[in-house]
Length: 258
Image 1 (tube, rainbow, N blue to C red):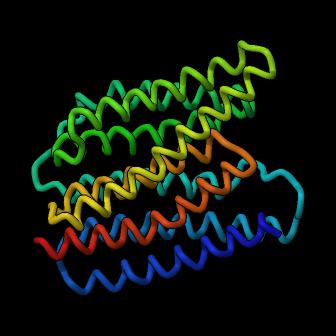
Image 2 (tube, one colour):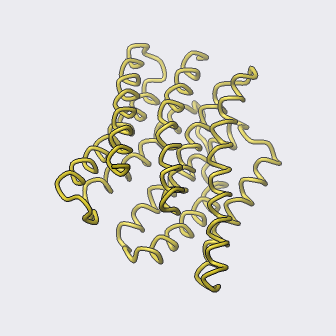
Image 3 (cartoon, rainbow, N blue to C red):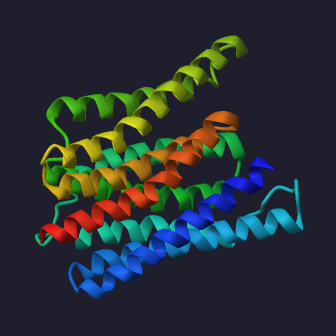
């Protein structure tokens, strides 16, 4: 039942956010930001609907490489385009390319080790890596994170990769402990990013950092989902669902400040 209710709830939220984004187009400002965001939400809505229909037709059967994967790749690329469209000046991707590529490549290697699905994992890693690259570049351009926060986020990303890799090399008992520690770390960042997004604007800050943080919150929740299962997966899935209205709210704030 849980596996059906979560996608259904996600589809309702995504449809509501999509309608809200389409209505924003009448404002006539930051049109490309909203258009790319709307197409990103629509892509994931199609993926969710495919997921629901597949579960109804073939319950308990493993989902193959299919249309939902393509929709997810499109979502990552469209969100990256939405981010880039909000910056009037051309953002530099050079500083962000290496850390984003390393983190995406490390995630991809872990996914392949867990699933053995080379093609879809590599393509997912490439599309998610591009989103991460644009995110880091936008963070640098907007000043959304302090130097200390950059250090904490970088340390968390490094620890997650290092400890998840170590689970393949240590005994089962130690592997379970490392996995638990990784889950706590992943979820901590997944909660703190959207919280910072809301608080940064509530305290009278600019909308642009909040806009970047809302997209980063979604990106990190996806990373958590791809690295987790069981209860942690559903917590991350719940956070990713909440990120859709958060991103829409941040876009509205950004448009209102124009």
